[in-house]
Image (cartoon, rainbow, N blue to C red):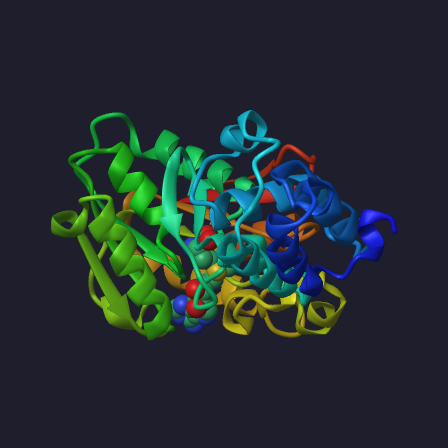
Length: 306
Ligand SMILES: C[S@@+](CC[C@H](N)C(=O)[O-])C[C@H]1O[C@@H](n2cnc3c(N)ncnc32)[C@H](O)[C@@H]1O
């Protein structure tokens, strides 16, 4: 029988037997990685080998390098059962970073789970653009709308030790995750987390920088996204009929929330650049520009309050 023909559900039993009988039946780290990579590949999961290794390292509480130095180590029954559960959940469409419980962003580790969007590498470019506008010694208050896990706003205050952040999200559950991340990064004294609809919790206050990665996927497109993306909160994805519903409200509200000369830095979706530049003009913002991400897709929109 080839490895991929063996159901993983029987693997724990196999290992139990193997430890009593022949070494040939043993589920070593190498054999488990090969079996799982093959299984994920057949399921159409992205980066099957990497995903298998990340989940196995998580189940064994070690780093990925250790898997390679211990290739021939057999898994015991408990390890195999823990890994099998992760493989089943991944096979059923859960995002790998929900299973790991963490995601790296801008060199820091953030807690993530089903309450928040998984931070994306392209959002690191939004952080870079915002840091450029903040300057190296900024002690000015920053507003982040749609904070989710807090990865974007918390990165800005982590990178600018004198800066302060006010971060807003409509989801109390997401804010609980952001709060944990702020605490883990030692940023609580410089961070205010507020629950509410966009500008409502900060009415009457002004900021030198407004940053946001809002939901910008058109409602009709959501059912066509990869299954693991569809597992992320709808509130984090759904940008209304044209994908611009939340972006539009942020841009039009920005002039009241920014000081004169303050910057607005937004993440946007593919193909939304022209519409967002129009919104900047409608809002009376100046110096509007669009930047692309590494895949050459329109991703960052910047504008300034005159
Ligand atoms: C795309 S996620 C971004 C999360 C995080 N900033 C990031 O970059 O990974 C959008 C977030 O906006 C929040 N959200 C959606 N509509 C909102 C609204 N009207 N007011 C405040 N937050 C909202 C969602 O709960 C979600 O956490």
